Length: 236
Image 1 (cartoon, rainbow, N blue to C red):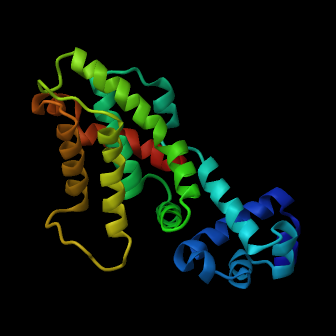
Image 2 (cartoon, rainbow, N blue to C red):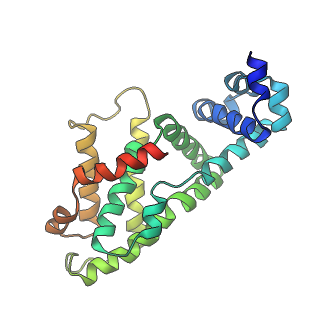
């Protein structure tokens, strides 16, 4: 029975199945700790078959990195349709925070990717850079344009000027919260629910970007945001 199931998969589908099985193993054990034997077992194939698709563990790891980078970006449709405005800035920041922490889509896949990005940051950083360029940098561009639109609309506190660094902080704070949440134990006790932590983080970041409190209250509605995120969650 297992053999017949394997034979029904095309070469492309088999490679994808192996990559899917490899992701949590590389994420948990690291590039050096993971073995092709364990990956093959998780994928339900022999090592020999694994090596027919990936000639070495390094080749497999490189393919996994490419797979993660090329995966559909969260909110790509929203990005494509975004018009620079205060509302776009507020909703964009909120969606990006949710995409990073606690994550949108399959929770295990999200956690695996974050662990792989973190491992890259501790190494040569090439995968981390490619991933951020693909999945976060487009948001930074939209935020920059929307911040200028918010300034023109009078929605930013007087004297506030921000650059790319401050906009990148949106991702960095959300990413730090996600990293702290990765262990099975509670590393930091914030004294509030995760939903409230996410909401407070979004408001903190919007204030940090200089938006007036009344403007944030006008455009940021956690319940409305949830109605946008739920369909995104189901498509990923």
